[in-house]
Length: 275
Ligand SMILES: Nc1ncnc2c1ncn2[C@@H]1O[C@H](COP(=O)(O)OP(=O)(O)O)[C@@H](O)[C@H]1O
Ligand SMILES: [Mg+2]
Image (cartoon, rainbow, N blue to C red; front, top):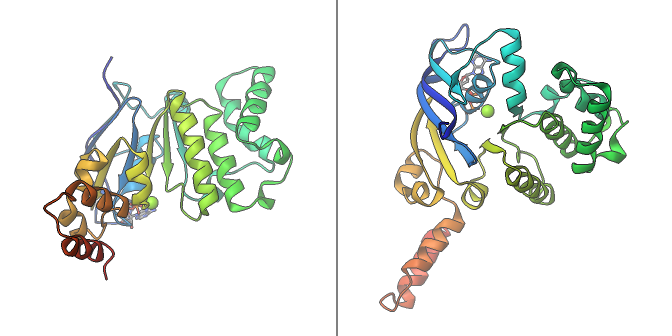
């Protein structure tokens, strides 16, 4: 078996009615079992990549493979693909369709040909895991944004996907909910799910990701471990992405040795903090 779970090769995608490609010969591979982050400016193509990965859109050129097999776009193949590749949209309003939490979470399972007992068992289990029992019968429109995001993730995880795609999951979350999400994702990853997340939160990327992809204008322009990627400070600054503070401080501590005077150290700290 190949080490790659998802492979994009020379993918070209242009939205109908536009001339600029959203993805312009993008090549990118996701290794099984990794926590991957994709970063890049707004409009660089992150969301388009996700929509192609679970078959919502079809590329005009290039090939997408999942578990070594080229994607097919007939109904049955897509049902199977979307069970394997779970996508959590940035905006939960786009994701949640049924009227109550419980109905919404059961919705995707109905396509999988499971018995009613099996469906209800899986739903109960996921409601417990995501601490949603008390919200089970609540109308979705009465939930807070954080709760809606949790329900969206639960509705995807109930299908037991092998690859979880998260489009800017920390957007609009407060620090408490961001920490809770980090714990939930640790559990999900710990049980064997590969994760690919689009985010602007570089501090999160530095602490969380095993592998980072940088996309610019529809192309992959850099990839590597967070340490190697963030070491390219000048390049990242040119892209207006910057470098996480945590990384700058840890590199500074690596440099601090007897030859660095206190004056030099102070200057470097002020430089990092932009004083
Ligand atoms: N529905 C759409 N119709 C036309 N153009 C779109 C549509 N969605 C996105 N685009 C364009 O495709 C490019 C990539 O967008 P997107 O994948 O949403 O980027 P990101 O998620 O990185 O912000 C952008 O130039 C954007 O304007
Ligand atoms: Mg986006």
